[in-house]
Image (cartoon, rainbow, N blue to C red; front, side, top):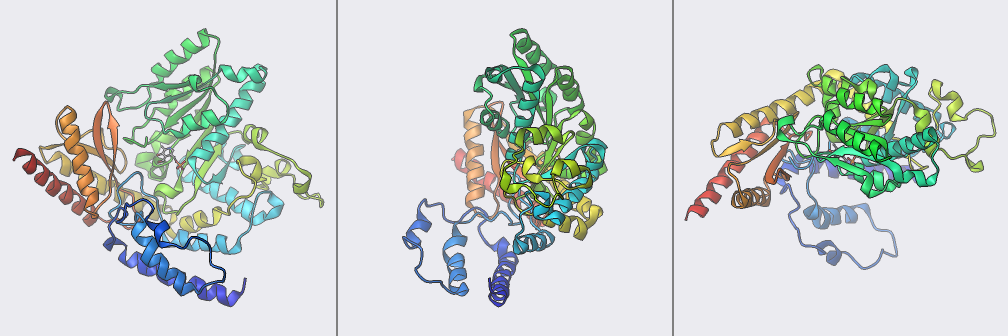
Length: 490
Ligand code: PLP
């Protein structure tokens, strides 16, 4: 690594990216080319024998790669949940990538591990989690790559806790049951499979429009009673604050009561909407009842100005996590008698390898620390409120056009809407509408299906999105609908 080459190559990339961000709204939002195999045809069959200049590589990125990208940072990206970025996070990421340290045990990079503990406590306070999730309160947090990983880790902790408690042997795993709703992210089901829960023991509890698609505690209770009567053991309940499809909010306190009564692990998945909890008006969903949870997770890479990847996972009692995930090979022990994470965890000397699946890990705390310091809590609140206001505007606009309906109550910055009517034909028109909007390249949205109805989702959350982009998106939807409906009448 030659420092001069490093400086020259890095500034070439920074110039490239600055240009990209200046023009990002000019690219078709969804990939311009959807031809499978296109890039393979453009690139050589094997790696070059000799190194090439940076300019040549960046030219290829511009010419061959960019047209095949969907521009997630476009201000007109309203699909899935947008993934955030900011200059602050990029600066932090550059530093952590540049320093390239690996804080798997505390002694392997003490300040990196400690910064993570500090940032996790800051984040927990910001979103109103109870003190029991703070390091000083007996809990603690870790930065992982995704909610999926966080859920797998908590399921493993819950499984081992339950098996130790009830003293069942390996075959006992066949009795453990996991509960979620039909709106819960598929990651819970995947996680349950990965930790050995039989697929038949994963309960998908239906929700309804009457409850705003939230998981009713009474339904969980009834399902649990049935399972207990059959000799099964309730293990894990996933509550979601801000479901992926519709943004629904499960009642954490009521679900927490059911979980406590039956000795289940309660995980609260606030992957998207956890960010909104920095604002007092959105905090209650997560904070009310969080003291009953065993773990909580949220993704700063979704709506907290932090680029991929960054998932916060807090646990109330880290010993369950470390019991399930710790390893102690000779080659990771310290000979100087300093570390031994658990002994010193109260001081922030955490061996983070025991809080996650992999051993090696990224120094993610740096970028989140930069975001928190550059924006401050008030800056982040303003950012979230701005997006919610844009979604409110869009919701009102949809409500003001008699041809459309808002399908589920708007939550946070997600609006789910469709052309009115029932039946497959109307669904077909809505599908065509979404395809035409996305095909225009001027905006990108995705869909969901609820109670058999095809629904278009507009998720506001791009770091460069302004009111004018939301207005343009609505005009595009209206114009496209005008055209489609006219053609259908002919
Ligand atoms: N949970 C919820 C509520 C989500 O919305 C998502 C993704 O959108 C996930 C979990 C999965 O997150 P990840 O991609 O970080 O695993």
